[in-house]
Length: 327
Image (tube, rainbow, N blue to C red; front, side, top):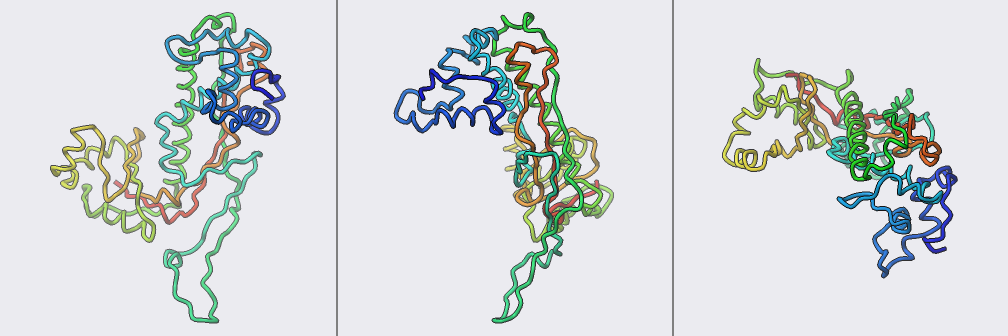
């Protein structure tokens, strides 16, 4: 079936797949290799079909989506994509999660490992002897899932002549706000009461404290550090950060260098701790699909009180890959 005669309707949002995936099953992108449409996904081909420009100085007005009943079915996916773009802008969550688990229900139990540090190393075993075990346990608690989003409060008449590029900017900001709240939830996992805390050597922060934090993460690799803007001045004042090479990097491009090979993330929260962990093993993100929109309202031009939201939660995978330094 050619992309320019596909019947677009609400049912494409209720297939159990994303709208784009539902379109791809009807109009596979692989059919367009070697053509002028190569590189566009099924949704983008529909935008081209109806000549809808969603970005740039020559972007169309919102009303362009509602020129036909078919093109109106593209509007909820436009909303979802714009919000998702905002989620990905400066999305610090991606810098701290090891894996993302997609689920299709609101009940989910994760697994965790109960081994001691010394059990993570593979030991030589004599022939016929029993191999050491790694104990994987189903969590006794359900993963706490939280819903974040916004309700759009604007009549179609009020915004139909607004440019899509401007509307996209507003929607992206919703996504950025969602990403920030998700990061705070992830922080609650890696700074929980069951995470081991390393005490400072003296009354002020010193490099020896950071070495202790690094050592406490073993046998994992401390490749990520999180500190707050409150602690950052003391950290940047350490001699190891004020040498000539580190200074050239920081003063040249404003980027904070790595400390002991760890990527540093600075957050504005008032937390009196530096958190070090192995990004590859510490945190699992659980999500129920992606960005969800009330497609039926949006297709019918009932923008007022239509919601855009996500449902996510977080779990610690290897808790002993995380360590905190009390400051």
